[in-house]
Every structure is written in C-alpha cells, then in structure tokens.
Length: 287
Length: 275
Image (cartoon, rainbow over all chains, first blue to last red; front, side, top):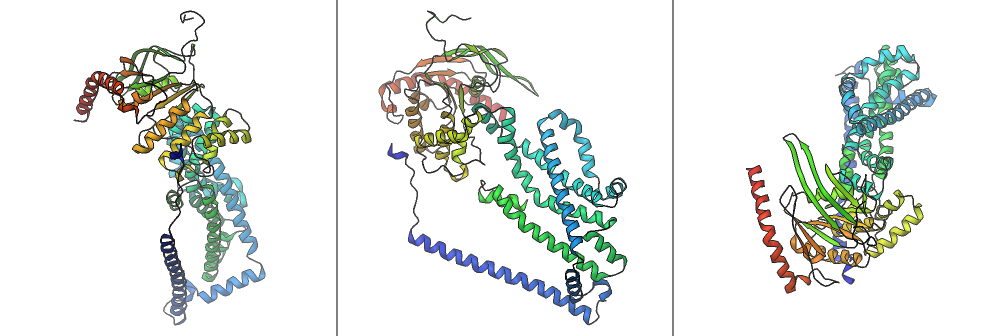
C-alpha cells in the first residue's frame, strides 16, 4: 500500500527565509531584554548609593552598595565565607533529597491505598497547615544546634510539597493507560513502575523548583534561629551587631546561591520531561 | 464441562453465558448488560452494534477481564475467565500510548512486560512498526505524531504480543474520513489469514457491515441481543468499495430497520435525562 507512506514535508525556500527573519527578530528582542535587565540593576544600585551618600537615608539602616561589595570581597578574599556557604549548601541538599524521597514514598503509599489515604488525610492536612517555623525550637531541642536540626526543618517543608504532588500525580494517571498496560501483561508492580511513577514525575518535577527553594528557606531559618555555621547564622550574627552591611552581604550570597541552583535545575527538568510537547513542559516549569 | 457437538470441534474462542453486569450508583443499581448469551468461533470477525451508551463497552471489558460479570460466565477457549484475559489485546477509542516512551519502546512495551529481553523486544517492535508503515519514526514521541500515526503505533503495540483475540472499542472514532478508511483496510489486511478472533464495538452500522463476518445487534441499555446477522460479503474486502454492492445495501437496510427503534429509545432517554 503506497498510500501508507507518510510524506515528510520539505520546507520551501520562502518559508525558510521567513523563519530566519523571525529568528533574527527573536534574537534581537532577547538581547534588548538582557540589556534592560542590566540597566534596572545598575539604576537601583546607583540610586541606593546616591541617597545614602547625600544623606537622605542613613547607611546605618540600609548600608551601601560599595560597602556591601567591599564586605563581600573581604569575605571571599579571606576565605571566611566558604565554610558557611558549604554548611548551607550541604544542609539544603540533604534536606531536599530526604524530603523528596519521603514525599514520593508516602505520596505513593497513600495514592495506592484509599483506606490509608482516608484515615490519614486530616492529620496530613493538619501538619501541613502548621507553620513550620514553630517546629524549629523543637528540632533544636531534639537534634541540637548542629546540622541535623536545620536539615529536619528543611525536610519538614520539602516533604509536604513533594508528597501532595506525588499523591496527585499518581491519582491523575490515565486509567486507560493503566488498563492498557494490564492488557499488555503488566503486573501491579510494573503498572507502578512504568505508568504511575512516570505519570507522577511531571507533578513531582513541577514541585522541584518550589521544594528546593523551601529546603533552602527551612535551612536558613534554622540557622538564623540558632546555629554555629551557615549563611543564616551569619545574617543573625551581623544583625545582632547592628551591622546592616553584613546582613545585606549575607543576603547577596544567598541570592546568588539560589540563582546558581536554579540554573542547574532548569536543564535537568527539561531533560526529564523531553517527551512532553513544548507547551506543556513550559507550563510545568512555571507551575 | 460443556459439550461442543462432536467432541473433536474446538471450543469457541469467546463464549458469554447469561452474562449480566450492573454497577452501583448513588441512585441505585444501574444494569448495563442484561442476560447476554453468545459465542464467537475462533477466527471470526464480529461487530457489536447498538445505540450509544447501550453497554457494548461493558461487554468488551468483561471479555478483556478488566471487570467481571455480576452474574453469568465468560469463557475463553472453553475456560472460565479469571482476572485479565492474557490472550486478548484491547484497542481503545483513544489511543493509550505511554507519552514518555518513544514509539519504539511503546511497541516493545508488551513483550518487555512479558519477560522478553530488551533487545529482542525492540527487534520485534521494529518489525511491527515497519508492518504498519512507520519505519523511520522509532525515536519519535507520541505527541509528535498525527492521530492516524498514533493509531498505527497502537495497532502495532497490540499485535506485537500476538494476541489470539482482538477487542476493539470504536477504535477509529476521531480519525478523519480518509485516514479512517485507510486504517480500516489495513486492519483487515493484518487480520486476514491470522485466524485471530475479533470483537469489534461500533455504533457505525456501515463500518460494522463493511468489516465483519457477523453483526450482533444490541438493544438500548441494558444491552440485550436484538438480532444476529451473518455478513455474506466476499473477502478480501475494501471497506470503501464494498459499500456499493447490492448485498451490502440490502443487509444495511435489514439491520437498520431493527436498529432505528433502539436508537430512538436511546435518544428519547437521553433527552429525558438532559431535559
């Protein structure tokens, strides 16, 4: 049957030309956006520097960009900052991984067992409604001033996000695809492994951005409330000395840290979701 | 044991004996299928026709083993069916491809689930993809294909397991007219000489007559058997051309006479529900 052959269209030269033009336009627009982004930053810093120099606002409260910059140079130059960054990153990564693993595990258990889900539902909702910051003193009591109490706080935040997304993702798995897999010969375990887990992955991934941010937030709050290391501790220390420059410098380090992490998660997500149509994938990234 | 005539004859591929299926709903028991009895000999292509929502799909799901009858027995090759019917493939209305697997891995999925080593499963999948005209599309993902191509992948996915029974639930709905005719012909071609038994649900009477050896007409829900008509048209058939034969028209008229009152009943009921 010749009619079966699927024709692959070759684009015409005109179409290619038009496509090239659109691409150039798009590139120019992106460049413009980048330039404006830099200008916004420069503008804010310049205004900040100006109002504090001429004395409209006292540098005591808001510090000064140049002072913050010098502080950062000192921190990085003397190497003083590195062990704090290391502590924060380490705690964040551990609490992220532990929170994600527990979240996926429990999300799966509850999604697969209607009884378990019905029984535990109010307790899960209650724990999730609890502002996690109030757990910090308890965790310090249980796990001490070291890393463990910070990790616990991070986990308590990450867990629920991943848990809810996994639960939802498994529940949303297309029942037709599950039936199909069963007809093709899948055992229950194979249904989980080949249908429900990949189906939930979209949901889990859509929570990665948020949950990594929460892991960091939990860890930093933990450090802030009582620690011996970490950027949160550094901020608290400088705050105690009424040193706004130190507080802002700590914030800057945190912000850069988050940006670097975001840059790493984006491509990972795109790779894991490469089977999705572009539109859906971008929706998930924003979600 | 049931006696199928002279002992030597094989039991029918599919047998439903006084099968009833109801579902619990908030408003009480809803009977989808009532007291159905019929047999399908091995290798026959049977169409189940009836108005929309009459319980045709419920019958297929019971033969597939996805749901069990509330009363009565389903037998496959003479054995009462328990659990999933592993001799059958089930083709749904919408394709149920795994969006995160490539076309090749979608087709290799069935053999892999059944323990065939990955390489071998992929080789089988490649052969079947070539057979349905999709050579060169192995590395695509389902969302990158047209509806017709996805349907072909679906067909390959089902046939690669070499099922003895094919259950099809309005599989060609939603395809455009040309693609539909083409794929109908391809399915007939793949089926011919394979000795596979087909149970094909549709509400399109023309499609039913054009493709099958026999049409079973069901009443508006709960499904009961209203008529059973042999289709005496020559094979191989072209579903497009066979419609112009006088025998086709005569049979169409005969079945339609019985069907239209059921369609009307079903239509009035839907009006009553929505009105």
